[in-house]
Image (cartoon, helix red, strand yellow):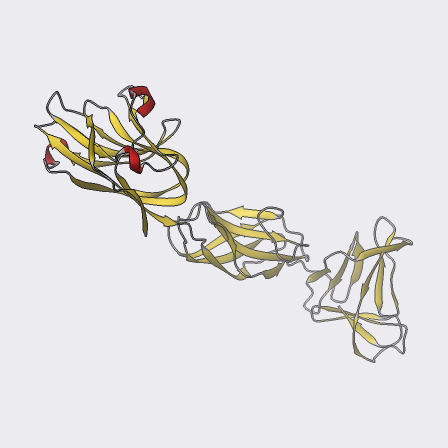
Length: 352
C-alpha cells in the first residue's frame, strides 16, 4: 500500500463543530483508497461525534467512517485515522472531509493546514456547511492553503481467471466452468464467459457473454450457455473485470450434441454438417470462403479442396490436408469427428 499526503501542518486554520465539515478538494486518479487521516486537536470539551468522508463534487458520499466521540480527541495535535469498511475506487476530483456534529464556542475540534508557501498544485481547502453548501479559501478571502491529510491507497490490479472444460452438454445448452484465481484490486465488478462460433478468442465487447455479477472471493464459478446451435463448435473463455481492465482465461471448445445418422453429410448455408461415428452431429466451422455459384446442396472435391454450394447458391471451398491414399476419387466418409474425402489427384485422402 502507498500513501498520498500533505503533512506540512504548521498552521492552525479552522474550528470544526455544529455539523460543519472542513477538508481538502483534490483529484485522486485510479486509486483504491482504504484509509484517511487528518491532523486534529480539541479545545475545551466538545460534544458529538467525529466522522471522516470522501465525497464527490455533487456531494454524494463515496465513503464515510465514524472515528468516534469528539471528547476522545487529544488537546495535543496528532494524526487521527479511519479505515473504511470497504476500500473504495476513486478516479475523479473529490473532497476529503472531517465533520464534528457537536461543539460550541470554545468547545471545538480544530484542523491544521500548511502555510501558503507549501500548497500543492490544483488542491485547496473547502468548508461544507451543515446545509451542504461548499466554500473555498476565496470565499473567506484567504491565501491558498492545504489541510493536512494522508490517504492510503492501492493501485488497481487486474484479476486472473482460468477456463475449464464445459460440462452438462446438451443439444443447445452447456455449462461453462471457470475459476477466479486472484481477485485483483479492487474486486471484480463482473465475471462470466464470452463465447462465439466464429471468433476463436471471444471477448466481452463483440461476442455472446454471460455475467455472474460482482465477485468477492476466489474460486470456481459456472454459467449456463443457452441458445447454442447443435453440432456447431463454440469457442469459450472465462473473464473477470475490475477497474484495471478485463482478464481472460484460456479458450476451450464445446459442441452441442444432436443425434444424426453416422456418415450422413449435408450442407446448410456456409456450414458443412456430418454425422460422426458416434451418431452425433458435427458442423464444420468457421464458414468456408465464397468463390463461385452452383446449385445449392452440391458437395464435391477439386484438387485439394472440399467444395460445397450453400443455400444462397454460393460456392464455398476449403483446403484439405493430405493423410493417405485410399478409395476412389471424390468419395466422402466419416471417421470419428473428422470428415474425410478423396481428391482428384491419385485418390489422395484429405481430412477435415
